[in-house]
Image (tube, rainbow, N blue to C red; front, side, top):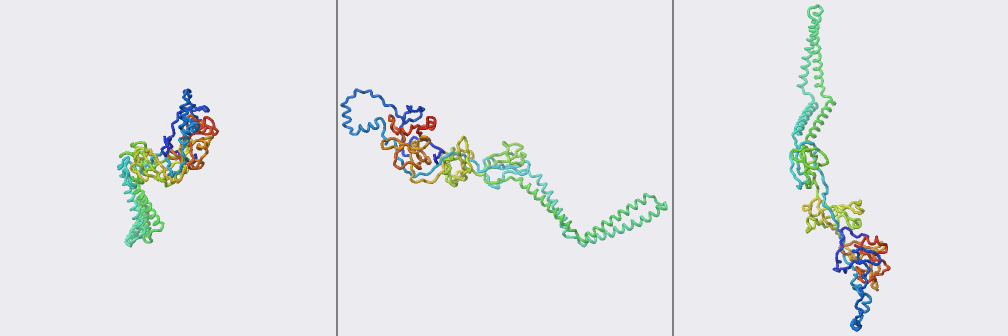
Length: 489
């Protein structure tokens, strides 16, 4: 029915002006079978007159003293007047209020886990605690990681020393020392060569054994090798380090520094901090437990947990708004919130998000709306049930009728307008939203016209029978033919 709100409709006993429809006694229509709870447009049959011997003189006196009573009684002899059965179409200034139910939920929830595996050494928070971003939640055991950091720093110092020596070059003292080593090696090599010559001659004469000659030859080879090594060191000191060697030493320094950074980072990550302001909703690990990095949480605290705590950031209200009402909901719109736990307290919120895609549940189409809390962040808790009211723009001079006046006929929505003869003529209307016990009419009637909200008992001509039969239940019109007129519930 247009943009009528179906979020929380009620069937009150009286309209907004205090009018109470006349009570009806359930009857069975002679045209169409109806259940006992159905209001019938057909009046009860007239009671038989048992006083047929009434004194004609008494009737004459009554007629003489009543003037126009006879004409009125002929028009509606057994029920109230049309004025009592109808109300005028009124104009009112309305504030659009869409009511729905929702649930308090966290804006976002994360499971806080360490980045390195290890034993949980300390836990500083408990379930329900509120924390600030950067606050320390827990600490992991750090002994092994401190040793790794010390080792990495030592390797860095060694690499830096070697690199510095290559960059600085050789000192004069080092060059002189190298030259002296070359001279000594040269003298040893010369002496060894002379001994080889002498022992070779003696060996030819048979004066020394061959084994002794072999030892002298070996000593000579060692002396020559030492001389060559001393000469290379002197040359390197004299010419300085090659650029390739310096670059390699620099790379070793960079690698050692990276190892130190990694070890320091792992040590820092043993301190677990809150990523944002929020509340601790679950505690998964206890001190002494072995905790491993993961994005999924354990169900209970144990010795092999995968997360330490669950942290929720802020609260909001999730509401499913029917598609018939979603056009009245806007981002930033003010919302009133009443929690079942605090029925006497009204909190304020603002529409934060309207889902772009509808959700269909049991053939009911709705849109999910997220409402941010302006007040109530400290009182409300995740999972609480709340009633929300979306406060819309005011509508001036809106045409309204009691909701009970809305009927349907042959699939069309309308009202029964009283004509000059007091009969109800069905007139299609375009309805707007329903608020309380009144419904806004967008098109089809004018202010001041009278519409039926009830019908007299004993008067089957209360409305034009050519328009169809009035029925009160939503299901009645479907089960008893297309000609019925159905009351809006």
